[in-house]
Length: 435
Image 1 (tube, rainbow, N blue to C red):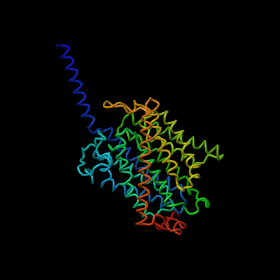
Image 2: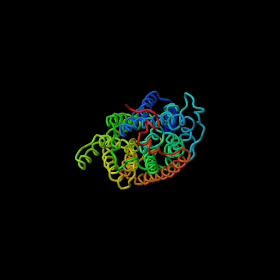
Image 3: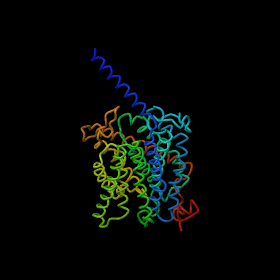
Image 4: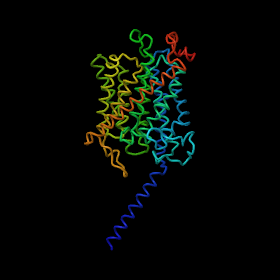
């Protein structure tokens, strides 16, 4: 009888503890909320001014303002569309392919509302954080068609691409859709952000055709110092991008930030070394490109791997993206103005696959579920799942992007006139120029 009472008491204690933990898991936490406010600001900073400066520094002087305008316009446009329906379709409902409209125009979202996907912060903050991801993904695509795409065409394309490509993929991977449910892991955007933007950029570059004078004229960057400053802002902002994807002020966020920083360092040094060896001089453009390659490649794996894995992934990133931007690009003869595909597309795919190799189960384990192990921990199936996720992302993005570009071209010409390209998009499209 005594043994029975002890067992019953222990069972009751476990039940009370579990219930308390469950209640606490759905309670707004001040520390988590504070960190996620900072992370949201950091990710927004990645687009404006980070990406705006990074891209503007790598185009010619006559196209600086038009390039910056794309980043700022994407920020404003995507923010409104995200509130109207983007967030709801991506992160509510339980559909395998798309969410619901229960949060359209943020309906029913009160001060104390909590999303089941982020149980310790206000849902409004989770909505804003995810908004910044949508913003930078749309803005990234613009780099592939810099110097030649109409501003009006870019705006129309952004509207369609957000809802047809980005939102469904975000739901598939992060919002309870079929890829996440199947077991595909993507901590902060290897599929949703980087492969997505890279493939869209490649398709857009091919559809629009090469820039005027590509291969025969000097299309060198006007001011690399702007690009260096932009890279610094991107690098720091990436701590919010990857660290914030832990959705709380916790050890996993710190591990993600550590692996992110080390991957950027390794990527920069690898690209620099390869360029130094092949071209006899280490260019500033190469160093910052390697850093961004490391940052993009570690993104899907950052919350699943140890810091030293970040160094290894950064080494792979620097080498693979250098090859893609210097060899593959020449083989395929496409004009991706700012190497969105070579850096983000290749890096995102590589990082998504390497997440399936290096994932450490202890980092993703929780009281409710075991952690996710990768190939090196004896789980080869995870690598196959990652390959499946990469294939689905590439296929859907390529087909949908091509169709959208053709539709937009029926409404507004995608490409500016040759004379506008010659005089520069700043004057031709915006009526102003950098003095």
